[in-house]
Length: 130
Image (cartoon, rainbow, N blue to C red):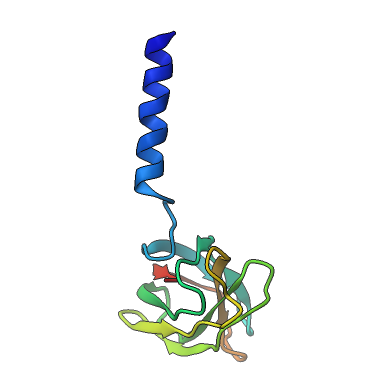
């Protein structure tokens, strides 16, 4: 029993020391399909480390070479930053923050295709909320 408690204590200490897997200062991967005709999709969540700070998005794959837009927002859709536009494969962009994106807020990236985009397409990359 003592061994189990000791092992559990070591494991919990390691988790606390390393922090959240998706802390806002760490890049998190995404692999999403954006719908046609101004379709929108969101990524997984991160915990904001610095309130109001700008984030970053690296686009590493774009299945069709189409432009898309992205912005950070709280997971309920509020406190959205301005859109970063014309994102393509190989491009790293700044995602503007919002002063209502407080430290420890749960943040995601919302991506949107162009209004006249004729087909769905897949994009991959990494992002962080900072």
